[in-house]
Image (cartoon, rainbow, N blue to C red; front, side, top):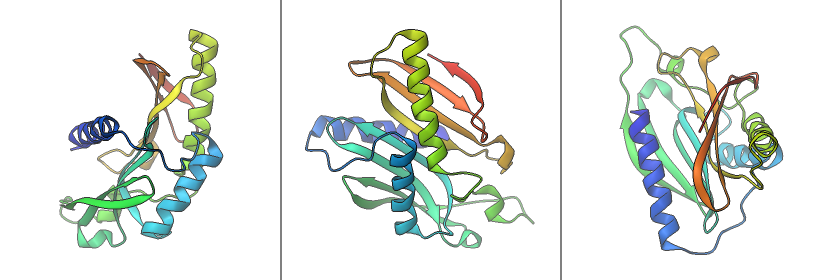
Length: 189
């Protein structure tokens, strides 16, 4: 399910990029900028919302593209897949979940709080960018995508922050994976 979600997000981004348009006010890929994105998400879904997916992508022509799968009632087993593009939220689909018998649906979802937060993800985008510049000589790496990867088994300790960066001109994608404490797990390119 997560691979198809990522593919859907990437296709959406490229479709929107090809359509052009002016960028709305985008929050920068920093701890402060991502903290503001978290506030926007909480304004839309509430402070106690639950998520299974959360991705922030960036396009020069559009700005930030936020994709979430969210619910405020996990026990309903109903979630919505939503995108925010140029400040406008739109629901793309309704999703019905299945969880193992005897399990609580909330155990397979995360909330934005002190354990998982976008300010930390923004910090990691900043540090990844600095590392890429220092180690690879890549000037001005740009955010391609940043996401919270929550494990299918609901094990909070296995949650990862993933940061994907590219050169301003495109090309190779550099992917950094971190644990919740911000420790680098791996870097791929």
